[in-house]
Image (cartoon, rainbow, N blue to C red):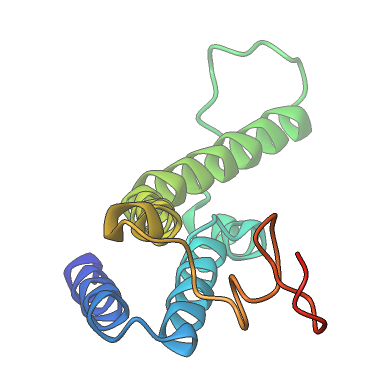
Length: 136
């Protein structure tokens, strides 16, 4: 899945680099932000999956909390922690890819050697601007 996401990111950045259009840059930024948002761990999915991965007997023997209910709770909490940690570990490359895309999009104007194009840049501004009457 990561290779497909990385290939799509490379294509988006190549089109943005080649076309130099504002809308391609906007699509690439939105794509990077969506990828970054989607690659965070989903705590609700983890809570849902805890029930499926709970052991039939509490296996937390090193925590001497006393009652069986507390041990069941700690087993569930540790299972939830493990599921969220696994999700974070699996989605880490996608988050780094999204951050890399955003850094690339921020640096491309400097790499190209020009500032981003703005409407009317350089016309009628600065110390050499000439007014309507011909005076500076």
